[in-house]
Amino acid sequence: MGRADKAVVYLDTHIVVWLYAGLTDKFTDIAKKTIDGCDVLISQFIRLELQYLFEIARIKIKPETLITYLSRAINLKVTNYPLDRIIEEALKIDWTRDVFDRLLVAEASARESGFITADENIQSNFRQAIW
Image (cartoon, rainbow, N blue to C red; front, side, top):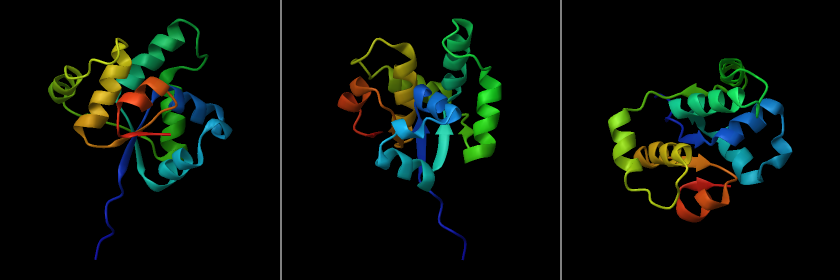
């Protein structure tokens, strides 16, 4: 008998940054338990948003360094989910004008996965938000 596959959960960009910085005290108990009990994923769009944050000096570490560290520390995986499916889902989202939020939530929605975020707008509008 093989082991059952774990559930998957996506992380929001700020969650990735907080994990790297060791700021787990900012997390709710539910968020911590979910990260510990699931396969943890990030969208390719997280890489892009992290690069943007690096370029405007909101973060000081290069995105690939951050992602490589978390890949080793928590087995974080970057997905290759089909772009056409993400866009199809993103076109249905009308509660935010933030392109990154739209794309990140769309991918989690298309995969019917949880999405860990402290963002109250996402929490209020996306039923699969975890916090």
